[in-house]
Length: 292
Image (tube, rainbow, N blue to C red; front, side, top):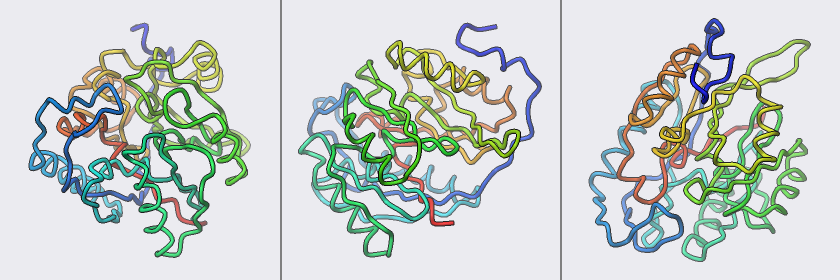
């Protein structure tokens, strides 16, 4: 058994159920890399907007083919990173906790996303603390996993907990390649446990976290898929799941195998052009969780 897999990998596969999802996306019409705010961005390396658009369209079409809803926010000239909609907010039960970006280059995106939500009747909460939305906040069952270390501040973890009234578990990222939580953890599906307790399946890259955070994850999610550094380095964990279908990078071959062993259906979508900006499948996908 690989050292990157938990003992649960050898357990019988479970019957997975695809659940309907609703997403917000943004066409990369202005995609380019003109500045550097993460290790993936090299302005000297040319980008191809047409390729980015074609790859993005493949992801969009995949969601529709799976029966999911996708809404669109209009791209804005001069904001090439708007394609990474996951950073634009965090949405639970119709409430939107807005984003407040660390870097000035992305600063105008926060108000643009909040305006989009407000115009459509969502309950928007304007942030005080620096946070980058679903890039650093992941809903796992009833718990919010919250990342810090590079972008969102620790104070935003307190703030998001106050907005949603849920348990928040802080995790510290230590590898600059994995600067957002959604590059190091994938939420695969919620699982109904005994006595109505919500559990959830996740996958994660242990080396992206400090020792204290690794201990928290190992204790809370002993059955999690632990991916290899090789799969993490190609943004294999920056994926989207409906509980059965998991959209992943075609280069994450080990992760694909691990998912199949657990009864998931991995679907490969290549977003290599958008990775030049430091984003992948999940980065381009903000989940819209409407009120119950």
